[in-house]
Each structure stands twice: as structure tokens, then as C-alpha cells.
Image 1 (tube, helix red, strand yellow):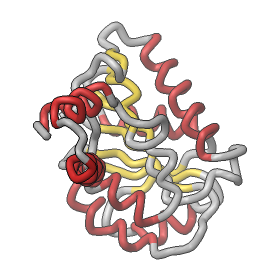
Image 2 (cartoon, rainbow, N blue to C red):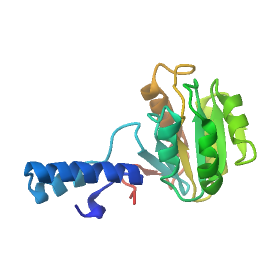
Image 3 (cartoon, rainbow, N blue to C red):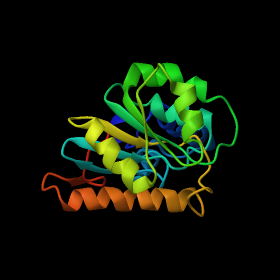
Length: 197
């Protein structure tokens, strides 16, 4: 499977594609057909979904990252210049596991929801933590912190039920707030047109 036909963000998702290709090969699927199928697949909504690029800042929606482990995988998918939006209704786990990867990659974290104090406490001293009272405020704050050339990642590590009906609604609201930014920025590029390497 040529890596350049995989249009997903994050090594964990590339590994998923490679595992699926291995199973397909064992089952007798033609390599050309598998390559064509993977090339046509641009990911699932709310799972490491490239939403847009605005003013040099990429926005990635991983609202489905509702626990610490999945948020960790999301964060590890980026090198530097990251601003992560984390928080919601805490489901358990150890938020301190995010300290080292955020310390290496993040410019800042924007904490949302009921878990704001937990996020601030867990990450104190590792990365700068800002609090936001709404997802709209979080997106605006993260955008300002990520400029220039950064990444805003929604990887909450928490459930959405304190602010939203479910993770999908949280992801849709995130995308709506990004769309408001794109409307005001002539250099905006939609996620479908951006390259994701």
C-alpha cells in the first residue's frame, strides 16, 4: 500500500489502514482495488477530521477522542505548534499522561467544560492552560494562540454531555465556529482541498 494514497492524519490511523490492507490481502483482494479504495477514503467525521486551514492554522476535529488514551494518540500525531482544546465531562483516567506529549508539542491548551479545573491541575507546569466558557470562545482563543502556522486540535479526552448532546454535536459546533473564522479570512482553505501529510 503506497503511503501517499493514505489521506489520514496520525500514525495510529495509518496503522489501521495498513492492518486493513493486510487483512484484505489475506482475503484475496486485488492490490490495485485496495489502493483505489484507500485513495478515495478521506476519514470519518469527528475522527482526526481536517476541517480547514485559516490564516496558516490547521483545524482538526477529533471530538470522538472522549478518553485520555484516544486524546493522547491525537496529540502525538503532531510535531509542534499545537493548541489542544481539552475538557468536558471527565470520564476518568489520568490526564497527567498528556503532560509530556503536550509539553513537547503544544504552545498551549484551552480547557473547556466541567473538567476545566482538572485539566489545569493535571497540566500545570507542563504547558500554558487557558480556560474558555464555551466552544466558540475556545476556538477563538486557540486560533489566536496557534498563529502563525500552528494546529488547533479538538481532542477533549472527556465526554461531551456537560455542554452537548453527544460528541457529534460537539464536533459540529467546532466546525461551525471554524467556518465563522473562514468566512472572515480570504486565505481559508477547506479540509477537503487541503493536503494532509
